[in-house]
Image 1 (cartoon, one colour):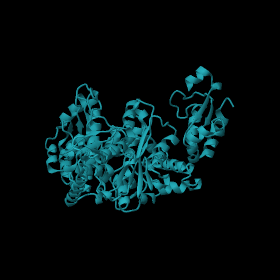
Image 2 (tube, chains in turn yellow, brown):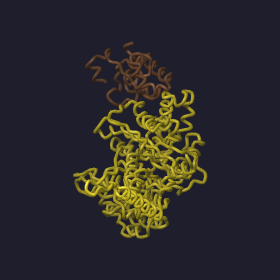
Image 3 (tube, chains in turn green, cyan):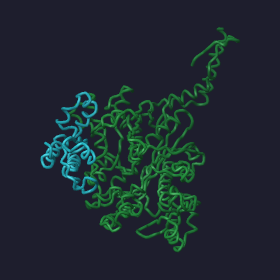
Length: 539
Length: 100
């Protein structure tokens, strides 16, 4: 704090009042924390068949392709989806370390005592999820037939996170003839369950492709999975819904009309259904790196004192369902990409306990970084850590693209997390942080097996947030690095790649110590006035 | 590549690959020598027979400024199974390359 003598009065004055300074500096000095995380999966086999782009493009190219015939025989039951080991990890019923104890392939094994609900979320059956799509539709675009409506109303009525008032949407079902007309004549997208049409999604405009039934379908699925992720987050943290001031949505969908195709705002739309009455928000995009960018922004908004609590959330993608289905079917595997996934993370003011997002250790792949793997991984790990005086070995766990290798390996894409860990390890060896012979140990010690559904932004760094928070609170680790990478070139606006990273660390405890009581504030003010009076006397 | 080959002549072209493992490198090498093994795209059934190397093979490594190689490639060299890549690439060149 600078002091200067007033030219007219001769008094020494401070630029800012003491109390203001104390409050804001406390906020600026302390990092934001992660208060909780939630993870959601909707089992969606009918959407694999009818909405995944691998399947829809195949159907356009050759509707009689053998793949399409084989596909339906390769779909998993809901029970198998729940019992799938990586899915149990995703919702928090198993840890990544426990998953490591199971040899690949995981699809041939079942989790003992697998449950629909987990520590961090749930795995919802497709019919209930379709019901949630109806609940999330505020423009009467989702139409469901009577029998299906009644059935999902009853099922969702049992769901602890769904309010009874939200079930009224099922009281006006559609006649079969109406559905048929909408699908046959008005370009509505059918909704299937167990291979039968149970409803449809109407086009929201006659001509506007941005509001076509196809786009609305994708967006409502994304919104519904985002809403359920937020509901689970609020259920599993001790912060009241009314305290959420801002929501950042970071999926890879775009909502808008033909005049503003990616206008947004999924965040506020999801917040509305999830009952976050006092929140506003916006969407952040960055391909698969979106969640990491969004977390940095949330952490900054909270650290700067704009908001006490910010939710970062994303729903999943119908387009990516069955993306590697051809390889899976060809090799006799079940179609493992049958899950629409979502997550939500609560970032809050430092409470002195929860792990901190260290925004001073930032990895950034910049325009000038270059595209060689070495340049990319260095910019996101070593370069950031070095500035903070840390070695690559000082990070206990790296959360990279946590893609499930059970899905990617049979598709010829290798073991994505392992490849990342090998690169970080090789970098550590080059920098002298480890010996070259220790590379395999580095991968084992600082890495994890992948468990997340291959939905682009979903596996990108964030799947470990819930476990990392717990591992840090339990004292198992003290520092984890979250790395998000994005393939920007897919959008054809640049050839560049992207990535950002940050460190989650054990709370310094300062937040608790400085969470000053009213009495302490009074004492501080009194001391300040006393000091000020002392200055006056000295004048 | 087909266009470049037509423009500059197949004998003047060298393909440098950066694939992360032997099988993928071999598939790419096969595509520019014997033709696309998946019979898809413009090189399906087109036998260009081009010279093709992986960036970690000594033939290419020795041509690169060691400092640049250290900065750009050395980390991946540590991660990749170089012997497997060389074995795969050599096999493809011996079978299909027309210019060695």
